[in-house]
Every structure is written in structure tokens, then in C-alpha cells.
Length: 201
Image (cartoon, rainbow, N blue to C red; front, side, top):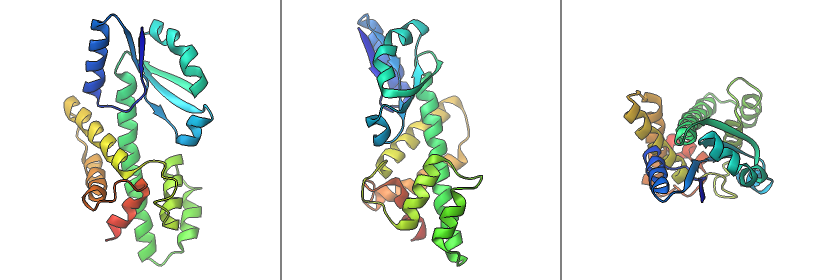
């Protein structure tokens, strides 16, 4: 039996599941994904894999229809470690983008022009571009691609991993505080771009 975990879970949880799977004689890989729902529907996700080589090869026929790319980071747990790291980075980027847009707003800059320029500049990443467009439009409740609740969950898991590894995370903790305010105000099911409004208030 081959168990494939595609959720974004805590690192400790993934290792515990792997141990339980091995006790049953199962093979286990962690395989968190990146991409929004439209990517999943089109089979264009990127998969972050932690697995033994042989287990990954056994899983490929199941994974390839979902993916435009499969990246193996190492043994079980490595895919999750990467996903938590990159999602924590994403939280910092999105909170930073919100802060920057608010500075631009108070400086009297045209929001559409700022959004246009940011999407073409050095600070652009796919998730930053996606979120600044929503922030500029005030569009946080339609077609939610990633909620504030999910972002906060991943941030907390990422910070837990960093703490376990002894890594300081001042920027990650600042992002956590921003997304925690969404939860505190009952706004956590809106798109993560809503963080701009809690920073404005």
C-alpha cells in the first residue's frame, strides 16, 4: 500500500503519519502542492515531494496527471519542510505588499498605476501580483483562492518548524500577527488579500 499525503500539515504530523504508515507496512510520501484551484483542475500543480526514490517512482503514475512539475527535496518530511518555508515567505511577501500599497495610498499615488508597476517590478511574484490586484480592487470575498485562515495555519506550522530548528523568524512573526488580526476580526474566511484592510484600520 502506498499512502500519499498532499495536504499542508505540520512537519511533526507528517513524520508521525509516516511512522504509523511504516508500522502497517505501507509506503508513505509527503507531497504538498502549490497552485490555485484552476491549476489543480488543469493538472498544472507543482508537487513538493519528500520520499525515498523507489517510493516516488511507484507514485509517479498517480502524481503525473496532477502536475506540471514534480520536485523531490529528499526523504519523507522534506517536501513539507519546503512547503512550510515557502508559505511562510509568502505570508511575509503578502503582508509587505499590503503595507507598501498603504504607503502608496497615503502618498497619493494612483492605486491602479501602483498595481501595474508592482506587477512589472522586482518585487513581483505570482502570489504578490495576484493579491495586489485583489487589494487594489477591494475584491476579497469572490472566488477565494486562499483564505486568511489557511494562510495563518501555514504560518503557524512554519514558525513551529523554525522554532524546532532554532531559526529566528522576526519577519514571519510580524506576518503572523497581521494574519491573526483577520482571525480576531472574524474575517478569516475571506481571501488572504483582506489583510490590507486590517493593516489600514
